[in-house]
Length: 410
Image 1 (cartoon, rainbow, N blue to C red):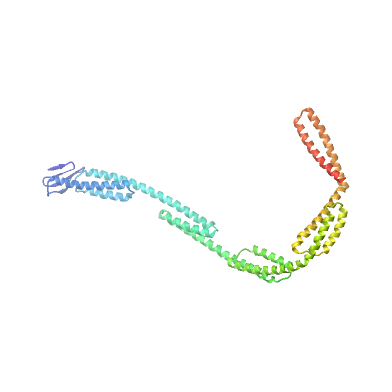
Image 2: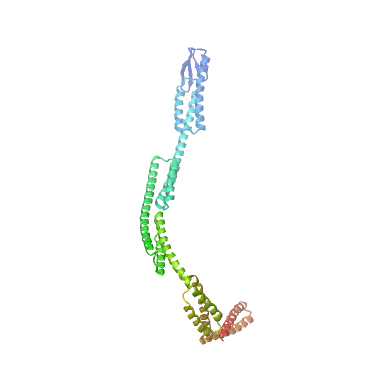
C-alpha cells in the first residue's frame, strides 16, 4: 500500500482521500505504479487549488459582483466536496468559506453603494425636475425657457437611474412641467396675436387719417395733428414686424408729403420776408447804439416805444431769422425795464427808510458787542471773547453791505 498525508492507494489500486469526515474513494488505478496514481490525483487537486486562487484574485482585484462570486463559491464548494482528487480538501473548503464571507461583505457594500447611487440619482433628478417646474411656472422669456427645458431633458437622460418607483414619479412631474410650459407659451402667443391684431387695427386707423390730411394746406392745425398722430402711433404698441414696416412706410409717406408741401410754401414765403429781416437788423443796430447802456430810464422808455412801433411796422420775419432777431430785441426791452425797476428801488422812500433803519440797527448792535467784548477780555474769558469776535466780524460785514446799499439810494 502506498500512502500520502492526504490519501493512499490500496493494494488493489483503489485510491482514497483523507478528509475531516474520514476516507472516501476517489478512483481506481490499474495502469501503473501506485505513486503514479497519487501523482495523477494530486494534479487534480492542484487544478482545484488553481480555480480557488483565481476566484480569490478576482474577488480581491476586480469589481466582481457579489452574487456572481457567491455562485462561483457554491459551485467550487460542490466540486471540492465531490472532488476525485488527493490533497487538503478541507483547507480548500475553508478557503471557500472565507471567500463566501468576503463575497457577503461585498454584497453588503455593493447594496449600500447601490442605495447611495440611487439616492444621488434621485437628488440629481429632483433638482432637474424642480428647475423644470420653476421654468414652467415663472419663465416669460419663451425662447431661452424652451432651450433650458430641452437641456433639462438631456440632463435627465444623462443622469444615473434611481429606483423604478422614484423614476416614474419624477418623470411624471417632469412631463407635467413640460406640458405646463408649452400651454403657457401657447396661451401667451395666442394673446400676443390678439393684442397685435388690435394694435394693427389702431395703426391702420392712424395711417388712414394721416393719408387723408396729407394734402391739407391748413398748415398749423394739420402739423399739430400729425404730431398727435405720431404720439398715438408710439403709444399704441407694436404689431408683427411685417405689418409694422408696411404701415410705418405708409404713415411716413403721408407725413413727408404734407411737410414737404408746407416747407415749399414756407420757403417761398421766407424769401419774400427777407426784406423785413434786413429792416429789423437796422432797427436793432440803432436801438442798441441809442439805448444801451441805459443812463436815463425815463427817456429810454420813451425812445423804446418808438423803436417798438417801428419793429411791429417792419412786418413778419422769415423762420430762420425769427428767434435770433426777436430774442435780440427782447434783450433791449428787458434792459430798459430793469433800469426802470432799479431806479424805482433807488428812489423809493420806504426802501430808503428800511435801509437807514437797518444801518442804525447794525451800528447799535456792533456798539453793544464791542462793550461786551471788552468786558470778556478783561475777565480773561477766552471762549466768550472768541464768540464775540466772530459775531462782531459778521455784523461789520453786514453793515458794510447795508451802507453800500443806502449810498446807492442817495
